[in-house]
Image (cartoon, rainbow, N blue to C red; front, side, top):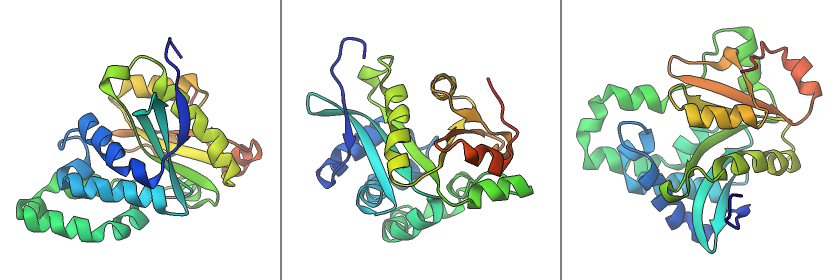
Length: 219
């Protein structure tokens, strides 16, 4: 791990404030919907991820400091997270009513894979396919293989939770993140691609590849 001793562990309730700090330091409002809505909303998303029975978060712990995170949901997360964080969402709109007419907010908030085709719908609705919700690494610790180690660790954790595959969306412009997925053996999945996002899948059960009949893209 490039000269640092790292511990990958499940996030706990007492980590929520630190997870929120790392998130807020890693993303800008123009790039990420929760940041548009403010810190309270970001914190609410992590509270849901850490305490909900159908989700979890892994942290990279370096001498007691959280230097990286990856969050997962056992299935699609957008709607259940939105419902759980609705009070904070409403509070954000009340604090800044201009958000209501911000097209970028609504476009990205409800961004989802193109499910117009039968294969796309099948992937999104297929049981036991987990979804990665977010990932971040402390800027001082980037380039030390922390994110690759985190996404690799999700395979074991999700498989133990009954998942047969994982899907993860990445902005097309985020080439370091895309390379990490490819290097770890994740497969680009054209059926789920949007105008600004590419999706990768990791198959935890080899038989699911044939069941989904994907147009896999090796890059």
